[in-house]
Image 1: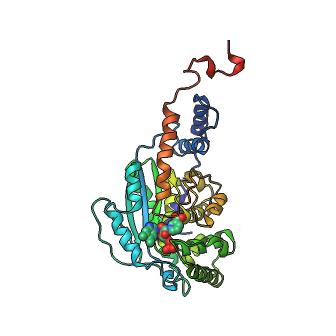
Image 2 (image 1 turned 45 degrees about the vertical axis):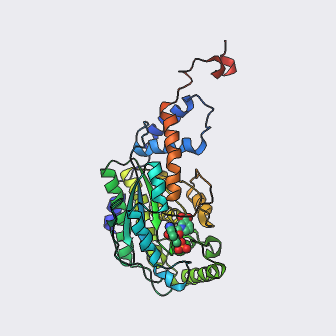
Image 3 (image 1 turned 120 degrees about the vertical axis):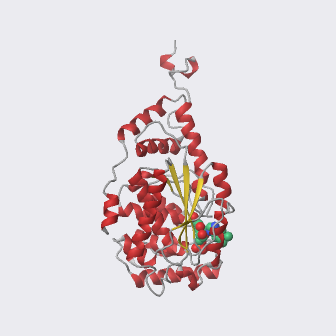
Amino acid sequence: MNEELKNYLSVIQPPDKKAMDTARLRWAHVAKPLNSLGVLEDDIVKIAGIRENSLVTLKKRGLLILCADNGIVEEGVTQTGMEVTAVVAENMTRGNSSVCIMAKRAGVDVFPVDIGVARDLESGSTYPLINRKIAYGTKNFSKTNAMTRNEAVQAITTGIELMGELSEKGYDLAATGEMGIGNTTTSSAVAALLLKQDPMGLTGRGAGLNDAGLIKKRKVIREAVTRNSPNCQDEIDILSAVGGFDLAGMTGIFLGGAIYRIPVLLDGFISAVAALLAERIYPGCRDFMIASHVSAEPAGRILLEELGLSPLIQAGMCLGEGTGAIAAVPLLQMAADVYSTMSSFEDIEIEAYKPMEDRS
Ligand SMILES: O=C(O)c1ccc[n+]([C@@H]2O[C@H](COP(=O)([O-])O)[C@@H](O)[C@H]2O)c1
Ligand SMILES: Cc1cc2nc[nH]c2cc1C
């Protein structure tokens, strides 16, 4: 691993046990049945540990959307053309994409990032574009490596730096999103290598691929994974061989969550692959992650299980952009409100709230 990356990772400390114990105790005193908010309770405890503070606030939340193109699109593995990435990314800067509408409702600031779109982008003024372009798209990984090792590290470092910027601005919660035609192909290839599984069961239709396209996509991924045979113990090697700039950048965002102690919400399939890359690079990184939903892509649930993360939502979503992550924000806010403001059993002197043995 490169020295700069090693330095970044050297500061990571595990979540604060004391803050988590206090948060668990607080939940136990809230006047409601024990554990009745399920995973939401666990997530609030996790946030307390990450922030080293049992007083949980989720006031400032930001969504980083990493936009990038993938050379593998040349092989006919997607329903739409590569040019869609740039168009949707530009629309994001004008507040006009699905996730922007959802983020406005959920009170989340949106940060579209060009980390490798195939052309220069024009920015709108609603959510100004952050330009961190590493290259004009990756190379076609069925012919050559998608990127160099240097580029992979640069993209990971970019993700870490973006989290550093959110940290400086006082953000309490980060969400991940991406936009990149072809990124379900890169994600399936990376997932197959990380999980050491046949890509067949990890490959789906992405953004609405038809039957013939799906057969082609599975063939392309299987051939590339066997031919490239990167070192499966080396995540940078995997990213260079068959990854994407968005995947590498999001890996950096998850690592950045642990470095800057900001909880990071996973989105769907692509985001979960990046989360697993981060966990493999720095075991324990998953303690700084919160799962939002289970993507309808076949590997969605498999990846969350591998990460040991429990999602809040199962709604058959597979839109990407960060839409699943944003959908989870109001749920977390509601849980934080109950946690912070709900009366405790001690406050409520009503006889019926007491366990049978304590009643007079
Ligand atoms: O997040 C997901 O689970 C998800 C699943 C399928 C597709 N997507 C989105 O669709 C695009 C990738 O699909 P494709 O078919 O071009 O690989 C990309 O822009 C993603 O944001 C996202
Ligand atoms: C229109 C469109 C919007 C998207 N948002 C995320 N992936 C996408 C793919 C397409 C095709």
